Length: 275
Image (cartoon, rainbow, N blue to C red):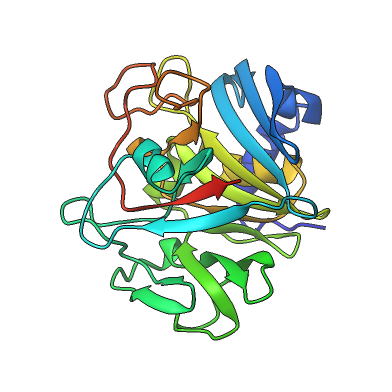
């Protein structure tokens, strides 16, 4: 039984208890984009009392024979769509936190067993988890236990946060503005049946309000995630699927302050899905 440690948690649960799982995950669109990948779109006038626009890539890792590439740029900034194109991907989401002026990750990053970036951002709430792929190819979400360092057990490690769910237990979230306010969000989750969910929640639009971190935590739980991790959000939140729109962007990025597919922010890393 997941436990909540604050009145804020309990208040949010009381609000959300009026929403059935069907209302949370009722699909506007569900389309196969690969034999083992389903693209899901949820649009509603009333999720958590506000309009919502959510995109999910549901990847069955039990059967998927393609690759998940951790793409990164050390000293530059690039659109998520261009990251996907450069890596011959048919889908991608933006990744973890980065230096918005100089480029490059501000959190620990290890790719193919090589340390790419050491952590130099000491904010613990964005350091609390990591997307990881071990040397056997198993995708997992790690919870911070001490400092992030090189690990020979993993090929890829991309630190991010906050971690929301770990081993089917809700993780404690700090009562800070980053978590309390509704923003666009990018997140990943792993289900009990070993599906990887890549998710974007649009925000900063009249048509899409975004989510607080507690709302996102509960939403990932409703989707069946036993582990869930927040990625960089806000203006960075982007999902690309080749051929589904003129530029491949299927969500509504907020950096241009318009509810269209043109407002991508340049980022420094992402997850790319390749055949």
